Length: 121
View 1 (cartoon, helix red, strand yellow):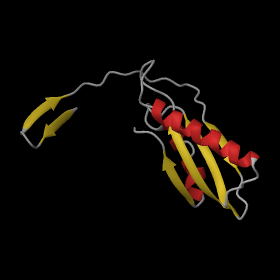
View 2 (view 1 turned 90 degrees about the vertical axis):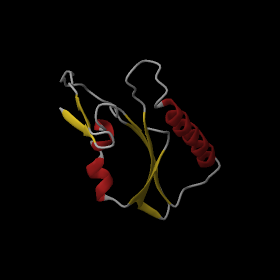
View 3 (view 1 turned 180 degrees about the vertical axis):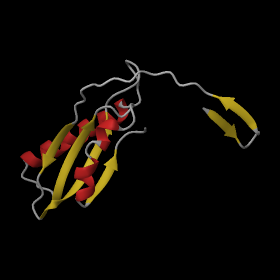
């Protein structure tokens, strides 16, 4: 690949070496049914995979998503129900080209939704 960096007008040749393989991924969803507009969705999502073991990239978002899920569980036990359906999404294979979340793109695009991404990717 040839990249031209316009700021300094220098050329860089990059070589990509990777392996192509088929792997099973697992996306995890929790659905809280809405009471009034159950056919409209609010998605809260984060990826949980990382390039290396112990990487911090997905962990802040995963921690936030799990805490949100815990707090929703408390509210549900107290009798609360959301106006719209809430879907908590934990995606796999983000580091390999957004594979986990893009496999659900057809489902997401068919419906009207508000999406909140947790974490910093």
